[in-house]
Amino acid sequence: MSIFSSIKDKIFGHKEESVATPASSAAAPVAVAEAAPIAVAPITPPAIEVDVAEVVAHMAAQHNESLNWDSSIVDLMKVLNLDSSLTNRKELAQELGYLGQLDGSADMNLWLHKQVMTELAKHGGKVPAELQH
Image 1 (cartoon, rainbow, N blue to C red):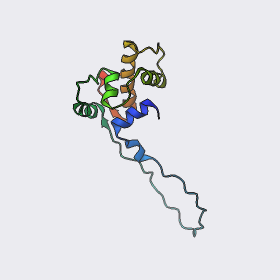
Image 2: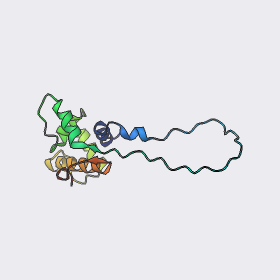
Image 3: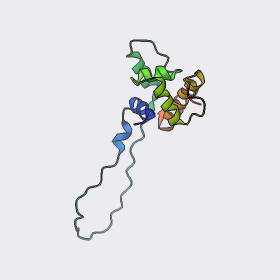
Image 4: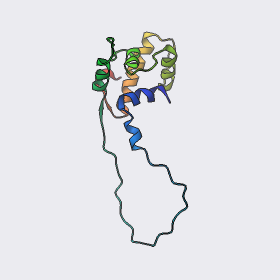
């Protein structure tokens, strides 16, 4: 599982998994008497918008230390109980297309935080504009 997927799952609570289509059955086809075709409307799952700031703030309040999750990728990952090591941040940077030096610099970490927030918004999260690019 990618690091971004882990972040998304922690915040969204695995909501996207509940929309997965059932696996196809390996059973042999059964002959059915011909009937008039039935028009079936496509089933669209209800849109569930997750307030990212609210969810993460609630999780941060449960933490035993004060964390600046709204500006720090390291603190965001800590709030989500994810490994915030440089190795994992480098992997996250590569997943999200960071083109700079993978050195854990302030530039890399600031870019990562904004990019994670932007990606969460693209995946249906409600993210304040100031936290995105």
